Length: 348
Image (cartoon, rainbow, N blue to C red; front, side):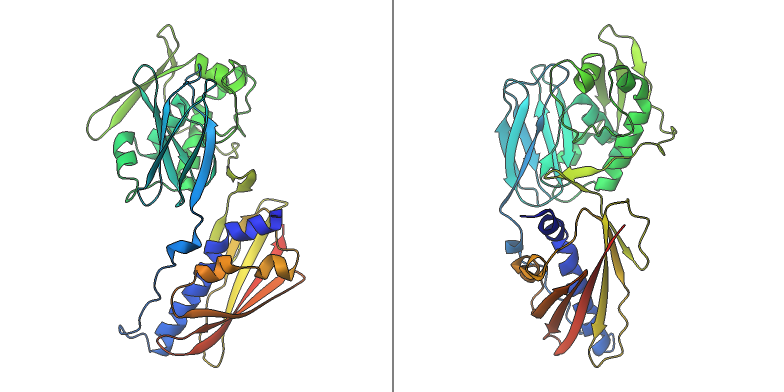
């Protein structure tokens, strides 16, 4: 699969959402906005891959060897795996992002992590601390247990990771780790007492939790305070994103104008036109795609999109030329209407 194919399939849910949203809008408008207009059914689960593979390292400085990694998906389905001697692991969890993970170390302490998609998720005391802050200092055990109904967004988790780096900036710098780029959740590292692992070697994170809230202490191995958390530190110079399959994913979906996307990425503008009906569908812009399609086959080879469409929505044809792809679509309920969805890819 090419990078372009990856980027489009990674955005397949967005494409299907645009088609389905248009179908719903068209259906409601054609019926005069009445309550009797039926909303399209949810996308069938078969559109998702069967499993997602998450890899990473579990360590507190020393690797957590032979530990049981637990993972849960957005539907509450779980999987387990065992870490190797170096703390590394690979787990196949039923697909359905995002994912929460945890592991219990030899001392009985539970550490947590987060994955917005298949890819890397390291499990360490600092990923746990960042996730705790993203969870508003509420117990992570409750968050993990309720993950099927209550989850955190990747933006919320990234904001907490940035603030963690701001709080640990001197500790990271002392071990040669760039606090402006290192993501405690998914930047690869080895439990070899260098770099980020050396930071872990020199801190001890302790949580004290009630049923509803937690406080933490961050000390040296000797017990002296290393960091006192400051929620007001500036994070403007810290630029973090999550990665999936080695490709950076930092998508922004907006109705209307595109936001300022990173140089070298692509924006996807989605325009919907309804045939024979005066319906105006707002433009959607998706920023942050790592690549764009390069051919009609790349863009249209897409059971991926069609499979995610609601009942009553059918793709009639698909074309792609230059940087523009077009789907001609028919909605058959609550009445038959044809509309066109055009995707324009713009390199930033």
